[in-house]
Length: 316
Length: 316
Image (cartoon, rainbow over all chains, first blue to last red):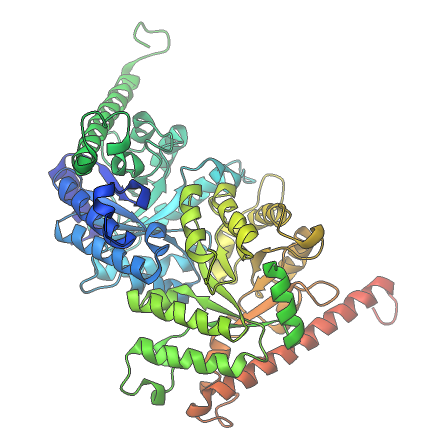
């Protein structure tokens, strides 16, 4: 089965496009899990309880590799065990490593994270700065092993504009050119079922730039968007909704801190005690799904309305 | 001591600017080291013997992280043990991970690879696609922990032109704009000794684009260049020499396969048997150093000549 088919089945089953970002920091883990435990053991217990609470309502998880790599060898073990546990529970698992290198080295990264066999990872984020020969080895692994990639196009952080919004001689911006490249890669043989629907090559598009997201939806009709920046980074449900198509498909929206730390937030801490951190995470994920659904519906409605209304008509 | 001072001391001591790329693949390891050993153990023995042979003639090593990450947890251990061994032997150690992410996550990567304490790594390569807030956490670690970074500017691979050579509205190219950003970062407080000489923020500039390297030398007078692409990737000594300043300083030139696999190459295999792979590596590193020295001297000479000659003069 293609990665994109597996992901769509999960989205349909859970009836929402929320991706839970398992980007743990030790400060997020309630005290009762940390007692008499190493940090990495405490985080593993925390991750597993979160996965148990989220597995039937969230289609996928994204593991931020930096949060694991900072624990060295132990961290790599924690990363693999977390990914394995999530995969066992039926979740789609994305490794957020933003890997990039020249062709022969990209092959090694592809072997590391999109390899065959018992590899629990379904997809990897990659950085396009080196161009096509740094991307094609990942595409090849997607084709052979049923995996996916998400290429950084427009990231959610404030200074992403420094490079991504540089204006080109033809009047377009760097991120738009990158989007064109991604659309080409998304249409390479074997990336889609019968050359229709979404591709196993997707794009990272932040929830923090809704106007640009709408433009990117048009430039990349084949790429599913992985949308970071919702919640703690300032992206709104409406901003994220701009990444979806008219049928309310074509994107998954990630939230990390707002789900992981729901138990510490003003919104939930009166209702859930620290030892109910997993229930708080689930409540936040469901609340986010409802929030998104409302925003997506509102946008679709607006798009449909726009199709029939005229300047100056009473409902314009 | 600043990272850049440590590096300069090593370059002066070894009297050459060669960086040995420890990017091992199992096919590079001679049979006698692989017998009755796991792949990662065989590679560790191979790396250590190479380090022993190179430690007095090469100032630094660069570890390509992909080659270690593809062995999972074991690979991370191999990576750390190799880095520790190289550091013990007095070599400067660069982790070639091309890491990149939003600010809060870049902090985790900086903690992982440019942390304090017994961390054997001196520097890390990073990717600029996310702009400044993805770079500053690394700069902060450089300042506090005496470390360095090398920012990708113009990579050595063929398709790097797809993004890096896009022409901007002002007539310049994307990589030139990135170079301007790097020059700014190189001049942040604490990155240089008394604000002169080279900075702890350097740049990756491929040996495969000599004309562009000369331009980049002018845009980034403060950045030391880490130069990949020499040898197996098609970069020549003259191409690499374009990365140096008029005093023959300001760059280190990496070679991986040509040094690691010297024992398999037509150039050396008549002279060295497989169990002398380490001596072959040393011979290739010294040969490369001589090759570079000649090209750097020729370029300096040419630059001096150019200063006095005129169009149409007999020696023009």
